[in-house]
Amino acid sequence: MKMQRQIRANSGIEFDHLRDCELEKSVIKFVEQPFRLNYLVLGRKTWHRPDALLLTPTGLECREVKEEAQASLPENEERWPAIGRALNSFGVSFRVVTERHFREPVRLRNVNAIWENRMFPIPDEPQRIAILEAIDTGAARTISQLCSLLSLEFAAVLALIRRGFLSVDLSVPIADCAFRGIVSADFRGA
Image (cartoon, rainbow, N blue to C red; front, side, top):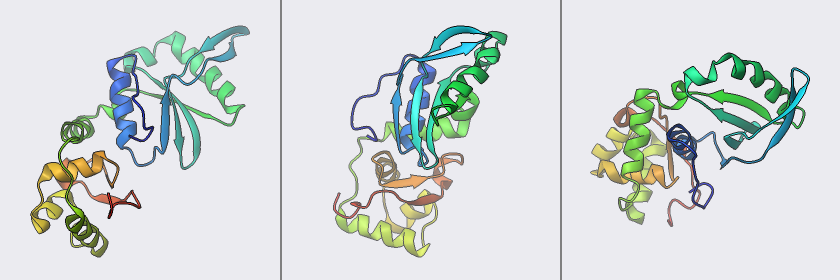
């Protein structure tokens, strides 16, 4: 939804990473396999295609998505700094992310739960206004509290998160997720 198009992943780990980017508030926009980068490593020319380019509040970041065992292979450890230097020369940061970053069990369960409920109908306008008020006043700080306070279905709140209206901390169990705020200015008239 952030990119308003279908995103294609080359592997299961890249798919999980892109779903995580879709739900992570600090990722504004992202694109998969953005370009081919020519760089030097140990004096020889070679090339690399980053797995993702992200726009974050701090700027552009290229990411390489690898399984931990593959990321730490000597040949990869040798080329990561060279790729980083090449990207830094364009003002783009570089980061290697592994399953430890986005397949952490709680985070992955949260992302999966949100994704599985993505098509659930969202609350009507009066309910959305009540949600805004409950979050703004601090009456509801977690998803469980919000559901209990307003008699909302859990899946409806997850659908609001998936559609980008609400943002939560994905690193704690989903029922206890604290709201990071209202993401969408058009939340009332959705």
